[in-house]
Amino acid sequence: MNTAPVLDPAHTALLVMDYQPAILAFVPEGEDRNALLGRVEGAIADVRAHGGTIAYVRVGFTDADWAAIPASNKSFAPLAQHRVMHHEDPAAAIHERLAPQDGDIVVRKIRYGGMSTTELDQQLRERGITTLVVSGISTSGAVLSTVIDAADRDYQLYVLSDGVADPDTEVHNVLLHRVLPSRAHIIDTTELHTLLRAD
Image 1: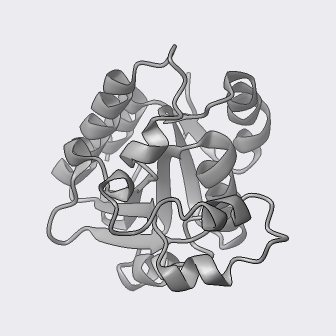
Image 2: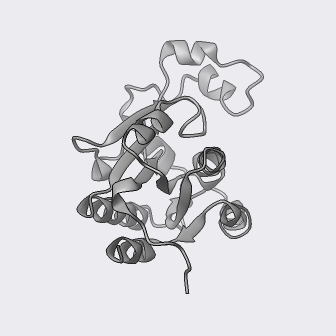
């Protein structure tokens, strides 16, 4: 029995992070990408139907962003070197099945976390958002970084266990079962539906 508190849609945002073709390509073969997209698509529809906010975060670099990445940045220097994920590249667009609608929040980031290089926190606070439901790729990148940051900013957090994925299944499982539960309620899309309806 999940003891996660009921969600108040008026103060809740679903974060959809890095659901971009270039990043989806790293989802392990064993994980059905279409099923993953379908679950997140359903979660978006659910949160919309209850009046919640959808916030999209995507990775995308300008020439100036690449130029500003120091060689010491182990994760991002190779992206700059090979000029990967230009913000106008179709591979860096939000997947068409999850396309944003008018009124959604959409931010572009240049590091792992959804908040550190964006105005996401400010935009959420302007809308009175205090609770985040987190989905994204990958569990060890965008999800981990954003959950730790958002927890430090005192958001109430939920991680959508069937809306996150990672190239490394073992790391994904350790994070989902051992690390993230200290900061977030771990729920799946079925539980999300129930927690929204219970309000």
